[in-house]
Image (cartoon, rainbow, N blue to C red; front, side, top):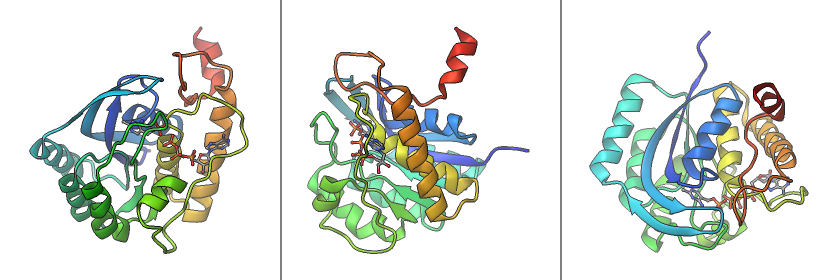
Length: 227
Ligand SMILES: Nc1ncnc2c1ncn2[C@@H]1O[C@H](COP(=O)(O)OP(=O)(O)OP(=O)(O)O)[C@@H](O)[C@H]1O
Ligand SMILES: Cc1ncc(COP(=O)(O)O)c(N)n1
């Protein structure tokens, strides 16, 4: 049987920890086929963001058309959306699907990834059509503390690790993957939290880069079989 298709609409992270790298690795780990629409290219590593280059709007729209026309994703997750025009496009084209919105406004390392007009577009256009939105505390505050059953504020957890770059991306992608498999929202949320804490535990002693390392997205036993 074919796997469900899940679409990630987000930005690249050259360090491979956050954004689309985290999204596609999580999709692979959880048995869904991942499609991706690139909204921006970031020059980034475990220490910080050096540059952000938004993809032109018509190229983002063309990627989205291609995926929606041909692959009919059962669930969509959004990460960094870069411009208010992209936020509005995603809201109009993805409303009605299982839509997980992770409002990426700032990197853990401090860089601002969304301007005020992007935040306003989230509030007006994207949050109202989300199946679930997963801001962390500071994103929740920046969005004006929106209320509603579809707002699930994320709050870190009890695993002590500095290898947590891309945790929010990983969590929202896991949520979308479980929704695509047919889980209801409470079940998908519980499974996503369990996946993230399990993978954070597996990667907590890794030393990749000099800053905040990535989550170990793929189960450790596969490493033993390959190496
Ligand atoms: N240290 C941890 N131990 C266990 N679970 C965690 C931990 N950190 C995060 N999680 C899980 O991942 C979810 C998302 O984490 P968090 O709230 O830190 O996201 P975030 O701040 O958006 O992350 P990022 O800044 O990487 O995008 C949490 O709700 C929780 O389920
Ligand atoms: C392309 C991209 N998307 C999302 C994040 C947020 O992840 P984090 O908060 O872990 O830095 C990021 N840093 N870069």
